[in-house]
Image 1 (cartoon, rainbow, N blue to C red):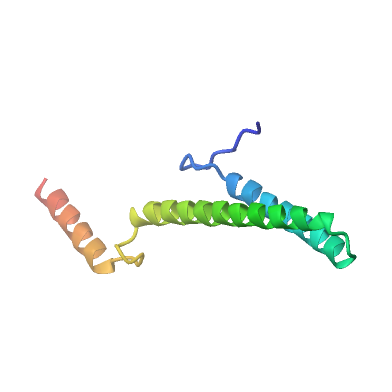
Image 2 (cartoon, helix red, strand yellow):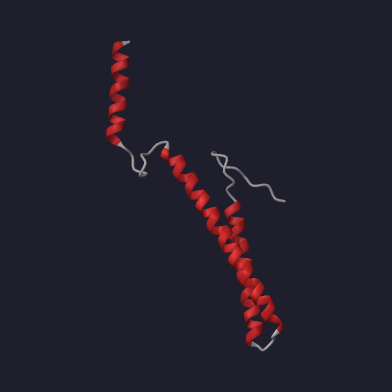
Length: 106
């Protein structure tokens, strides 16, 4: 099994790439099976059905992983941003003012 490299947040960065590669492989298998069916090779129909099932499973894996990655990105961005993802300059200005006031008092 291949080890995933971790980014600075400890998130595996190439798992999504691996899932997308799986999706492409299954899509290629489906295309080959469909070509066989078009040529009249009925035995390829079973392979095509299985490839469709595998493709659906791979698609779900890709979408779940993308959702996880996006959720982590939003969480990491939430440290520096407000709830809606935008920077709250008024809150930042107020915090700077409070810190400067504490420095003046000290």
